[in-house]
Length: 295
Image 1 (cartoon, rainbow, N blue to C red):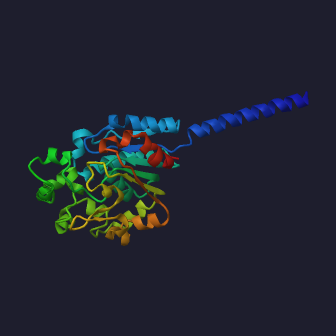
Image 2 (cartoon, helix red, strand yellow):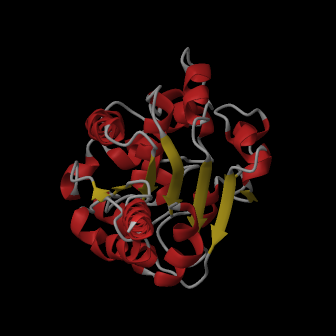
Image 3 (cartoon, rainbow, N blue to C red):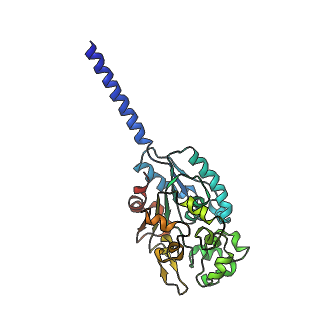
Protein backbone atom coordinates (compact mmCIF):
# COMPACT_ATOMS: atom_id res chain seq x y z
CA UNK A 1 0.00 0.00 0.00
CA UNK A 2 2.80 2.38 0.91
CA UNK A 3 4.53 1.64 -2.41
CA UNK A 4 1.28 2.31 -4.27
CA UNK A 5 0.80 5.69 -2.53
CA UNK A 6 4.38 6.68 -3.32
CA UNK A 7 3.88 5.76 -6.99
CA UNK A 8 0.72 7.86 -7.17
CA UNK A 9 2.47 10.82 -5.57
CA UNK A 10 5.37 10.53 -8.01
CA UNK A 11 2.96 10.44 -10.94
CA UNK A 12 1.20 13.54 -9.64
CA UNK A 13 4.50 15.37 -9.22
CA UNK A 14 5.54 14.46 -12.77
CA UNK A 15 2.17 15.64 -14.03
CA UNK A 16 2.51 18.94 -12.22
CA UNK A 17 6.02 19.32 -13.65
CA UNK A 18 4.74 18.79 -17.19
CA UNK A 19 2.02 21.37 -16.68
CA UNK A 20 4.48 23.87 -15.27
CA UNK A 21 6.99 23.30 -18.05
CA UNK A 22 4.31 23.47 -20.70
CA UNK A 23 2.94 26.68 -19.20
CA UNK A 24 6.43 28.15 -18.99
CA UNK A 25 7.08 27.31 -22.64
CA UNK A 26 3.99 29.16 -23.87
CA UNK A 27 4.73 32.16 -21.66
CA UNK A 28 8.52 32.10 -22.07
CA UNK A 29 8.76 34.58 -24.94
CA UNK A 30 9.14 38.26 -24.31
CA UNK A 31 6.33 40.52 -25.55
CA UNK A 32 6.84 42.07 -28.98
CA UNK A 33 5.89 45.71 -29.45
CA UNK A 34 5.43 46.83 -33.06
CA UNK A 35 5.67 50.49 -34.04
CA UNK A 36 4.31 51.34 -37.48
CA UNK A 37 5.68 53.66 -40.14
CA UNK A 38 4.42 56.72 -41.95
CA UNK A 39 0.83 56.41 -43.23
CA UNK A 40 0.55 52.98 -41.56
CA UNK A 41 -1.43 51.60 -38.65
CA UNK A 42 -2.06 48.33 -36.83
CA UNK A 43 -3.94 46.63 -39.68
CA UNK A 44 -0.83 46.65 -41.88
CA UNK A 45 0.91 44.37 -39.36
CA UNK A 46 -1.65 41.60 -38.96
CA UNK A 47 0.40 39.22 -41.09
CA UNK A 48 3.60 39.91 -39.16
CA UNK A 49 1.76 39.47 -35.88
CA UNK A 50 0.44 36.13 -37.14
CA UNK A 51 3.95 35.02 -38.11
CA UNK A 52 5.19 35.76 -34.59
CA UNK A 53 2.35 33.99 -32.82
CA UNK A 54 2.62 30.92 -35.04
CA UNK A 55 6.37 30.69 -34.51
CA UNK A 56 6.23 31.41 -30.78
CA UNK A 57 2.81 30.42 -29.40
CA UNK A 58 1.69 32.43 -26.44
CA UNK A 59 3.70 35.54 -27.35
CA UNK A 60 2.02 38.84 -26.57
CA UNK A 61 2.20 41.01 -29.70
CA UNK A 62 1.11 44.64 -29.44
CA UNK A 63 0.97 46.96 -32.45
CA UNK A 64 0.68 50.42 -30.95
CA UNK A 65 -2.31 52.32 -32.37
CA UNK A 66 -0.84 55.79 -31.98
CA UNK A 67 -0.20 58.53 -34.52
CA UNK A 68 -1.29 56.25 -37.32
CA UNK A 69 -2.16 57.06 -40.93
CA UNK A 70 -2.34 60.84 -41.47
CA UNK A 71 -1.42 61.51 -37.84
CA UNK A 72 1.97 59.97 -38.59
CA UNK A 73 2.95 63.32 -40.13
CA UNK A 74 3.03 64.96 -36.70
CA UNK A 75 6.53 66.01 -35.58
CA UNK A 76 8.48 63.09 -34.17
CA UNK A 77 9.24 64.55 -30.76
CA UNK A 78 5.50 65.01 -30.25
CA UNK A 79 4.85 61.40 -31.27
CA UNK A 80 7.57 60.10 -28.99
CA UNK A 81 5.74 61.48 -25.96
CA UNK A 82 2.73 59.28 -26.70
CA UNK A 83 4.75 56.21 -27.66
CA UNK A 84 6.85 56.61 -24.52
CA UNK A 85 3.81 56.39 -22.25
CA UNK A 86 2.45 53.35 -24.11
CA UNK A 87 5.77 51.48 -24.11
CA UNK A 88 6.41 52.25 -20.45
CA UNK A 89 3.06 50.68 -19.52
CA UNK A 90 3.90 47.49 -21.42
CA UNK A 91 7.41 47.28 -19.95
CA UNK A 92 6.08 47.72 -16.41
CA UNK A 93 4.19 44.43 -16.69
CA UNK A 94 7.06 42.63 -18.48
CA UNK A 95 9.95 42.35 -15.98
CA UNK A 96 11.91 39.99 -18.28
CA UNK A 97 11.99 42.65 -20.98
CA UNK A 98 10.37 43.28 -24.35
CA UNK A 99 11.35 43.33 -28.01
CA UNK A 100 10.83 46.37 -30.24
CA UNK A 101 10.02 45.70 -33.89
CA UNK A 102 9.77 48.97 -35.79
CA UNK A 103 9.07 49.79 -39.43
CA UNK A 104 10.62 52.80 -41.28
CA UNK A 105 9.66 55.99 -39.51
CA UNK A 106 8.77 53.82 -36.54
CA UNK A 107 12.38 52.70 -36.38
CA UNK A 108 13.47 56.27 -35.70
CA UNK A 109 10.74 56.70 -33.10
CA UNK A 110 11.89 53.51 -31.39
CA UNK A 111 15.51 54.57 -31.33
CA UNK A 112 14.57 57.90 -29.79
CA UNK A 113 12.63 55.96 -27.14
CA UNK A 114 15.71 53.87 -26.39
CA UNK A 115 17.77 57.02 -25.96
CA UNK A 116 15.31 58.91 -23.80
CA UNK A 117 13.82 56.19 -21.54
CA UNK A 118 16.39 55.73 -18.75
CA UNK A 119 15.05 52.49 -17.29
CA UNK A 120 13.78 50.68 -20.37
CA UNK A 121 14.09 46.90 -20.52
CA UNK A 122 14.15 46.46 -24.30
CA UNK A 123 16.08 43.30 -25.15
CA UNK A 124 16.19 43.32 -28.96
CA UNK A 125 15.50 46.31 -31.21
CA UNK A 126 14.66 45.17 -34.73
CA UNK A 127 14.76 48.04 -37.22
CA UNK A 128 12.83 46.94 -40.31
CA UNK A 129 13.78 49.02 -43.36
CA UNK A 130 14.14 52.21 -41.36
CA UNK A 131 16.14 55.27 -42.54
CA UNK A 132 18.39 55.32 -39.49
CA UNK A 133 20.92 57.59 -41.21
CA UNK A 134 18.24 59.73 -42.85
CA UNK A 135 16.29 59.98 -46.09
CA UNK A 136 17.28 61.68 -49.34
CA UNK A 137 15.29 60.53 -52.34
CA UNK A 138 12.36 61.18 -54.67
CA UNK A 139 10.00 58.49 -53.40
CA UNK A 140 6.26 58.42 -53.98
CA UNK A 141 5.78 59.62 -50.39
CA UNK A 142 7.86 62.68 -51.15
CA UNK A 143 6.00 63.43 -54.38
CA UNK A 144 2.72 63.18 -52.50
CA UNK A 145 3.84 65.53 -49.74
CA UNK A 146 5.84 67.98 -51.86
CA UNK A 147 4.52 67.58 -55.43
CA UNK A 148 6.40 70.55 -56.83
CA UNK A 149 9.77 69.81 -55.26
CA UNK A 150 12.52 67.44 -56.31
CA UNK A 151 14.84 66.04 -53.68
CA UNK A 152 17.45 68.72 -54.27
CA UNK A 153 14.96 71.42 -53.26
CA UNK A 154 13.23 69.82 -50.29
CA UNK A 155 15.74 71.29 -47.85
CA UNK A 156 14.11 74.71 -48.42
CA UNK A 157 10.91 73.25 -46.96
CA UNK A 158 12.41 71.04 -44.27
CA UNK A 159 15.11 73.11 -42.68
CA UNK A 160 12.92 75.79 -41.15
CA UNK A 161 10.37 76.05 -38.35
CA UNK A 162 7.45 75.08 -40.58
CA UNK A 163 9.14 72.04 -42.05
CA UNK A 164 10.16 70.73 -38.65
CA UNK A 165 6.46 70.29 -37.90
CA UNK A 166 6.26 67.54 -40.56
CA UNK A 167 7.65 64.17 -39.52
CA UNK A 168 9.55 63.32 -42.71
CA UNK A 169 11.51 66.58 -42.39
CA UNK A 170 12.77 65.41 -39.00
CA UNK A 171 14.97 62.86 -40.77
CA UNK A 172 15.48 64.54 -44.15
CA UNK A 173 19.26 64.48 -44.58
CA UNK A 174 20.44 66.50 -47.57
CA UNK A 175 24.15 65.67 -48.11
CA UNK A 176 24.59 68.86 -50.17
CA UNK A 177 23.36 71.12 -47.35
CA UNK A 178 24.91 69.46 -44.35
CA UNK A 179 25.48 72.66 -42.39
CA UNK A 180 21.80 73.54 -42.59
CA UNK A 181 20.81 70.00 -41.69
CA UNK A 182 22.99 70.06 -38.57
CA UNK A 183 21.83 73.53 -37.54
CA UNK A 184 18.11 73.38 -38.32
CA UNK A 185 17.00 69.76 -38.05
CA UNK A 186 15.68 69.15 -34.54
CA UNK A 187 15.60 65.37 -34.49
CA UNK A 188 18.02 63.17 -36.45
CA UNK A 189 21.24 65.11 -35.69
CA UNK A 190 20.42 64.75 -31.99
CA UNK A 191 19.71 61.01 -31.85
CA UNK A 192 22.69 60.34 -34.16
CA UNK A 193 24.90 62.51 -31.90
CA UNK A 194 25.91 64.60 -34.90
CA UNK A 195 25.19 67.76 -32.93
CA UNK A 196 26.34 68.20 -29.37
CA UNK A 197 23.74 68.44 -26.63
CA UNK A 198 23.84 68.17 -22.87
CA UNK A 199 22.05 64.81 -22.70
CA UNK A 200 24.22 63.00 -25.25
CA UNK A 201 26.10 60.80 -22.76
CA UNK A 202 22.92 60.01 -20.85
CA UNK A 203 21.17 59.02 -24.08
CA UNK A 204 24.12 56.83 -25.05
CA UNK A 205 23.96 54.96 -21.76
CA UNK A 206 20.23 54.40 -22.18
CA UNK A 207 20.67 53.08 -25.73
CA UNK A 208 23.32 50.61 -24.61
CA UNK A 209 20.83 48.87 -22.33
CA UNK A 210 19.71 46.81 -25.35
CA UNK A 211 21.30 43.43 -26.06
CA UNK A 212 20.77 43.27 -29.82
CA UNK A 213 20.22 45.71 -32.67
CA UNK A 214 19.01 44.08 -35.90
CA UNK A 215 19.18 46.27 -39.02
CA UNK A 216 17.14 44.97 -41.96
CA UNK A 217 17.12 46.43 -45.48
CA UNK A 218 17.82 45.74 -49.13
CA UNK A 219 18.58 47.25 -52.54
CA UNK A 220 15.07 46.83 -54.01
CA UNK A 221 13.27 48.69 -51.23
CA UNK A 222 12.33 51.62 -53.59
CA UNK A 223 11.43 54.01 -50.74
CA UNK A 224 14.33 54.24 -48.26
CA UNK A 225 16.97 56.27 -50.10
CA UNK A 226 19.72 55.35 -50.06
CA UNK A 227 18.65 51.88 -48.98
CA UNK A 228 21.92 51.60 -47.03
CA UNK A 229 20.45 54.08 -44.56
CA UNK A 230 18.65 51.08 -43.08
CA UNK A 231 22.15 49.84 -42.16
CA UNK A 232 23.35 53.28 -40.95
CA UNK A 233 25.13 53.96 -44.25
CA UNK A 234 24.58 57.21 -46.16
CA UNK A 235 25.73 59.52 -48.93
CA UNK A 236 28.74 61.77 -48.74
CA UNK A 237 28.71 65.19 -50.46
CA UNK A 238 29.18 63.53 -53.87
CA UNK A 239 26.41 60.99 -53.22
CA UNK A 240 28.85 58.12 -52.77
CA UNK A 241 27.77 55.60 -50.15
CA UNK A 242 29.71 55.63 -46.90
CA UNK A 243 28.98 52.49 -44.91
CA UNK A 244 28.11 52.37 -41.24
CA UNK A 245 31.59 51.71 -39.88
CA UNK A 246 33.04 54.67 -41.78
CA UNK A 247 30.45 57.16 -40.57
CA UNK A 248 31.69 59.75 -38.07
CA UNK A 249 28.94 58.91 -35.57
CA UNK A 250 30.18 55.31 -35.59
CA UNK A 251 33.91 56.09 -35.42
CA UNK A 252 33.34 58.62 -32.63
CA UNK A 253 30.85 56.29 -30.92
CA UNK A 254 28.58 59.27 -30.40
CA UNK A 255 25.47 57.33 -29.37
CA UNK A 256 26.88 53.88 -28.65
CA UNK A 257 26.70 52.15 -32.04
CA UNK A 258 30.40 51.25 -32.10
CA UNK A 259 30.32 49.96 -28.53
CA UNK A 260 27.26 47.83 -29.27
CA UNK A 261 28.87 46.48 -32.46
CA UNK A 262 32.10 45.74 -30.60
CA UNK A 263 30.31 43.52 -28.11
CA UNK A 264 28.56 41.59 -30.89
CA UNK A 265 25.25 43.34 -30.51
CA UNK A 266 24.68 44.50 -34.12
CA UNK A 267 23.27 42.27 -36.85
CA UNK A 268 23.02 43.44 -40.48
CA UNK A 269 20.43 41.60 -42.54
CA UNK A 270 20.18 42.29 -46.28
CA UNK A 271 17.47 40.91 -48.58
CA UNK A 272 17.15 41.54 -52.32
CA UNK A 273 13.85 41.53 -54.19
CA UNK A 274 11.76 42.95 -51.35
CA UNK A 275 9.75 46.11 -51.99
CA UNK A 276 9.23 48.55 -49.16
CA UNK A 277 5.60 47.69 -48.47
CA UNK A 278 6.38 43.94 -48.42
CA UNK A 279 8.95 43.78 -45.62
CA UNK A 280 6.43 43.03 -42.88
CA UNK A 281 4.59 40.35 -44.86
CA UNK A 282 7.58 38.48 -46.33
CA UNK A 283 7.94 35.15 -44.56
CA UNK A 284 11.56 34.66 -45.61
CA UNK A 285 12.48 38.00 -44.06
CA UNK A 286 10.64 36.98 -40.90
CA UNK A 287 12.34 33.58 -40.56
CA UNK A 288 15.80 34.84 -41.55
CA UNK A 289 15.99 38.29 -39.96
CA UNK A 290 13.34 38.60 -37.26
CA UNK A 291 12.43 35.29 -35.68
CA UNK A 292 15.96 34.43 -34.41
CA UNK A 293 15.96 37.46 -32.12
CA UNK A 294 12.48 37.13 -30.63
CA UNK A 295 13.38 34.78 -27.79
